[in-house]
Length: 246
Image (cartoon, rainbow, N blue to C red):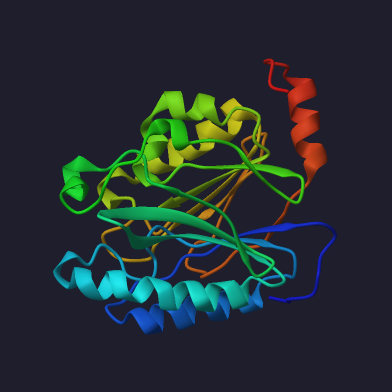
C-alpha cells in the first residue's frame, strides 16, 4: 500500500487481532495508519487497543491518555477513528474519537450498550440524542458503534450522511446480521458505510467499505483496505433512486 495522496479521500477500514499487550496493539494500529494514503479516513475496530479486558480495567483506563497522545501525532496527514475506553469524572465511556490534522475533531460515547455481554456493568450509557452528523473537510459523517447498528431510530438520525462509520466488536455467531445490516444501511441511506471488526476468534473478522449502491468490498484476511471516496456516487444514487434524502 502506498501512502502517497490519492485524488480526494480514501476510506480505509482496518482489521487486526487485538492482543493482551496494549502497546503491541497500538504499534500495529500506528503502522497501518502510517501505510494508509495521505488524506485518508482510517477506521479501527471497537476498543481495538484493549478489547473488553474487564479483568485489567484499571490498566485499560490508564492506557487511554498515552494512546491519545500517539494518535494525535499519527493524524497530522490523515483522519484516524476508533473507540477508546476512557474515564470522565465518575463515568467510564466507550468513546468514539476522531483525530484529524493533529487534533481531536469529534468524540461521542456509545449510546446503546450490549447488555447481552454485560457492558452496562462497566460503562455508562450515553443518550441517543448524542448520535448526530459531524463534518470533516466537507464530508458529512456519522457513526454507529457496534450494537447501535441494530436501532432503526439511530439510522434516521444519520440520514443525509455521506459516510457512516461502524467500529465493532461483533460476535461471530451473528456474522450474517453484521453483513446484512451494514449493507442495508448503505442502501437505505444511499451513502458509504465503512465497517471495521477485529480479527479475534470471537468476532466476525469482517471489515470493509460498502458503496451507496450496495456494492461491497471486504478486507478478507488483509489488515487494511483502500477504497476511494467519490462524492458523485452519492449524488448519482440519490438522483437515480430518489427517496427524499438531500
